[in-house]
Image (tube, rainbow, N blue to C red):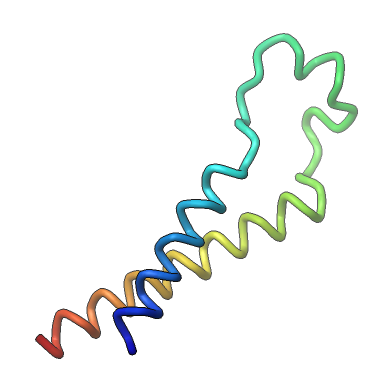
Length: 69
């Protein structure tokens, strides 16, 4: 059961990382971004927090599965 949760967590983490937009977009970012030096939007902040939470969960499950085997 823990391995299934670990696999689902890893697949969702990989998908979340691929869904993120790249931060360095070259000169196009100057014309499309209004808050160049401001804080990230709430959606981007939510994705950052979700990525960190999933990474911590992934490592905790990896350590737990390592101790069980």
